[in-house]
Image (tube, rainbow over all chains, first blue to last red; front, side, top):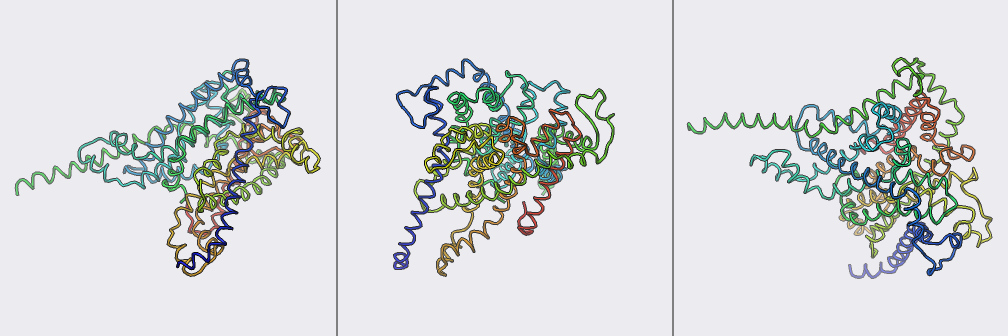
Length: 280
Length: 311
C-alpha cells in the first residue's frame, strides 16, 4: 500500500497543478466581468473609457446621481416589495402543498402529483397571452397585484419540497399526532423547522428568480413608477447607453443584493440541492 | 376483558375520524396552490389552446369566444413566416452550442471542486455567483465588455486583431449572446453535477483502485455511468432553458431582434406577435409550437439515455 502511494505521488501532483490552474482560471472568468464593471461604476465620466484605474479619482457619485436624478430608488423599492411578497407566499404555499403530497393521504393526491409533473413540462410562455388578457380584465396590468399574485406558487418548488419531506423521517410527526397535535401545528412546529436546507434552496431560487425576472414585469409594468429594477435598468440603458459609468452603477444595484443573499445562504443551498433529490 | 371490549371500538372510530381529518387537512394544505394554479395556469392554458385556432386581436371589439375559428391557419402562417423561421433557426443554433458547452464546462468544474483541492467551497461559491445575476445585468455587462472600445477589443488589439463592434454585426451578435448565457448558467449545472458526484459511493472508486484502474478509466467506467441520471436531468433542463431564451436577446437588440433578425428568438417573436402586433391567435400558436419542440426534445433525450432514467 505504502509503496503504491509513493509511486503514484508524481502523476497526482501534476494532476493537482492542472486542477488548480483550471480552478483559478475559471474563477477569473467568473469574477472578472463583475470586478471590471464594479470598478467602472466608481469611475468619473472622464476616466470611463480608460483601461487603467486611478484609485484617487474613484467616486460614489454615479450611485448618488442615479439614485437621486433617476427613479432607481423607486425601482429598487418596487423590486424589494415584489420579491418579498412573491418569495414569502411561495415558501408558504409550496411547502404546504409539498407537505400534503408527501405526508397526507387525501383523495386525488396521485392525480394532482401527476398533473404537477405534466405541467412542469409546459413552458411558461404558453400561458402568457391569456394570462395577460385575464390580468387586464381584472385591471391588474401596471399594478403590484399583477406583478405578484399570479406568481405566488411554483410547480418546481412544490416538487422540490415534496421530495425533501419524503426524505426526512416522519416518526416525530407521528408521535405528535398521537399526542393529539393538529396537522397545522405539526407542519409549522415540527416539519418546517426540519426543512431548513430545502427552504434555503427555495428561498434563493425564488428570490433571485423573481428579483431578476424581466419578461413578465416588462409586459406588466408600463409606467416607470411600477418598473422593477431589471425593467428600469433596461430602459435606462436604452436611453443613456453612452454613460457607461452610470449604467454600470445601475448594474451593480441590480446585481449585488442577490449575490449577498446567496453568500449568506449558500452553505444550506448546496446542501438543499443535494438532499432534496433534485438530481433523481 | 370488559374494558378491552369497550376501548376497541373507540379506538377504531378514532382512527376513522383521524383518517377523515387527514383527507380534509390534505385538501386544505393544497388548496392555496390549487386555486392559484387553476386561475393562472390551467384556465389560461385551455384558453391559449383555443385561441391558437382562432383569429383574435386583443383590440377587437368582440370577445375571444365570438372570434372566428381559423383552425390550423395560425400554425401555417407562423411556420411560413420568414421571421419565425429565422427565429427558430437562431434558437436552434443557440441551443445546439450553448447546452453542450455549458454542460461540459459545468461537469469539468464540478470535478475540479469535488477533487482534492484546497478552497473548494470558495471556488464553488465563485462559480455560482454569475448564476445569481439578472440576465439584463449580464447583457449590459457583456455589451460593456464587448463594445468597440471595450476591454475585450483593447485586449485582442494587443495581438494585432482588428476591433469588432460585436453586438451590431449580425455575424457576431448571436455568439456574444451565447457566451453570456454559458457564462451565467454554468454554476447551476455545476451544483447539480456536484450533488450527483457526491452520491457516488467511495467504495466503487476504492475497488477500482485495487484493480489498478487509471484516473481516466475511473472517470469513464464509474463516474459517467453513475452520473447518467444527473446528466439526463441537466441536458433536459438546459435544453428547455435554451429554447426559451429571451431576456438577453431583448436587451441586446432593444426588443427588435436585430441586427437583421440575427438575435430574433422564438420567445421574442412570440411576444412581438402578441404584444406589439396584437395577433393573439398567432402568438398562442407560436407558444404551442415551442411546447411541441420542447416536449419532443425531452422525449428524444429520454430515449437516448435509456428507459431506466426516470424523472
